[in-house]
Length: 342
Image (cartoon, rainbow, N blue to C red; front, top):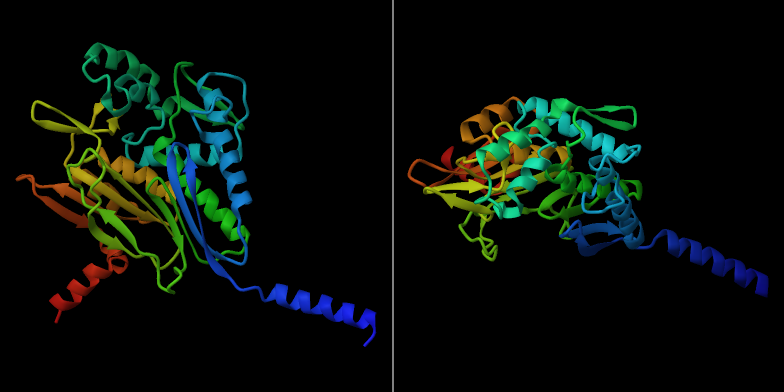
């Protein structure tokens, strides 16, 4: 065999082995938007650089703590044209606002700032201060015209914190889809997008934490296991680790934009399942401010979501309420239901 023939065989062998490169499950983790992310996906190669680039682009669009981001410039009334990501989040936020009668409102940033993170300023807030701030709140007072945000009052600010982490999960999921990844799990700050199966060949299993009164955040007991077997977004909102007490009543970190005050409700944890995590994230936040009866009524009228609520009954005991459509995703509950039907 001459040298040329040998070289051709080596090239052909290299192409063949390259095409049959074995897939493996890869795990990426790190910090983004002041929280932790974990990404597991099945691929023949690492996608680290592309994932990092997507996070950086997202940071320049929707991170309110970045002075150069689009949302910061909108809030500061600087001339800026918004991008497709901003438009998609803005429109989803408005849709959820309408469908929750204003309980979800992305213009609540001035109220959140008034009360302070974790209600650090709660002793300083007066009814007069709340009333003066509410003029800057209201999703009906802000709109998009093309690529520009139009405010009725320049003091208005947008805060997408209740929807952005979920949307970031969707953005990374779209990246993985473009790269041909069929099996993956994405978590950003407790919000998830899953598709396909894990490394053991079974549908991804996600734990819903018990709402334990542990302000340290150390306790992580599992209340329920959620096992989506199709592409799904899953988001959980809970006030049980971020609250304050006043006159014997607990107030969670969720602001009710209609009143301007923290919501005092009986839902301890709201988990929402939807086709995308942005939708799940927004409704999980909204349900926390509604209370059980209103949350169930609202969620039952939104066919694209399923819910799992943990709430406190009149005696303070923890109870659960979930939608019928969620049962196929609750393996432990399915087993109990089968036993009860025997």
